[in-house]
Length: 242
Image (tube, rainbow, N blue to C red; front, side, top):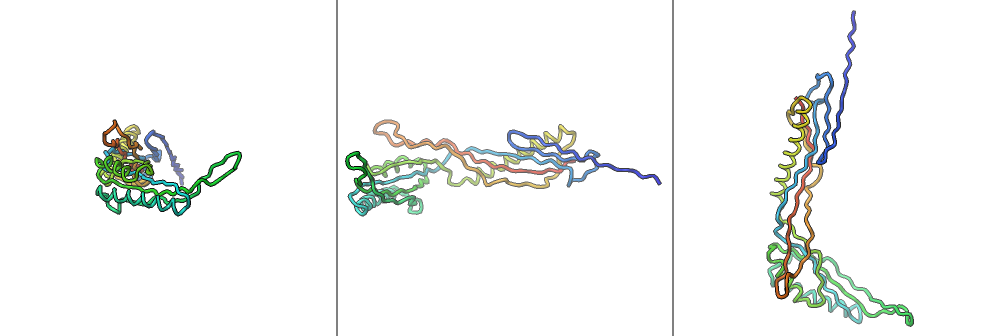
């Protein structure tokens, strides 16, 4: 009886791309099935959107002769800021306390060494302005209400509802992955078949510039540069090869 020896040669090709990784597995004898003839591709989709809201941080900071005096003065300034925000139409849910602190301030001299000169109290707020075009006016109102005790920082344009942009980014990621998979399959003399798996590698990533509030000229309104926000989705898709 004549025995026939069968030998299967497995070939694995890995290709690194700028926007992702492609992995290909094909039995050399061409006798594979959809389970062992596949191509795996990473696709990236990014959509740019114009922010429609603005977040900013406002801090009131005062000095007093005692902890209690400093905290009382800061609380009065903070109350004035809250009133200004309510008058400007900012809802209570859109104002969040970020920090409250009281601590001594020191001065050091060679003659007297370290000496307490007073106590500083601070209260910080994170504020969401749901209409970006009103942000400059609201910031001015906060500064007017709090006076010289107010400090501003962390002005961040944001998108309130990025779900539509996320769907577009997912579609772009699928298109990117399919284009790469089809290109590699064509180069290898085959074509892609049905999708075997799809995995979104992480939650959508939202990135944006960090412009600061600024006054363009004297006697003009505070200007907020919104820029654009990028919404990025990364997926990994496995296609069967025909």
